[in-house]
Length: 131
Image 1 (cartoon, rainbow, N blue to C red):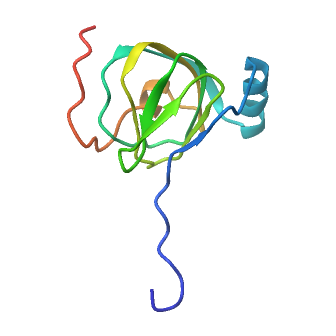
Image 2: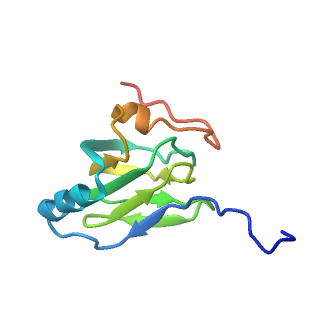
Image 3: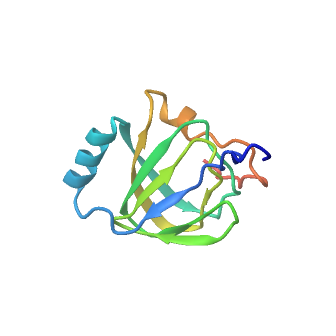
């Protein structure tokens, strides 16, 4: 830009490997952030299309392993102890879940979890989950 300022950068997914060892540490971190916590379990499922959310989310992987896709659709492995910082508007997707992955999910404001994690502008179709 001519005035020397730069355009704001796009929000990006951040995976902080081995961020915690215990649930007590997770709860302390959530207290410090002021976010609203709940639990989310991903059962066996295919890779999701890259998308973003309308809310700031921090996730903590408690059990299981998978990967996330970042904004460039690069695979980032995740597992127990990892902290996932997903700012509003950050492109990402959960990878294939072979068994299950247990998360503690915290949201920056008091909203229903399904509203918070509702995918926006997916770059492809979502799989059918046959409930």
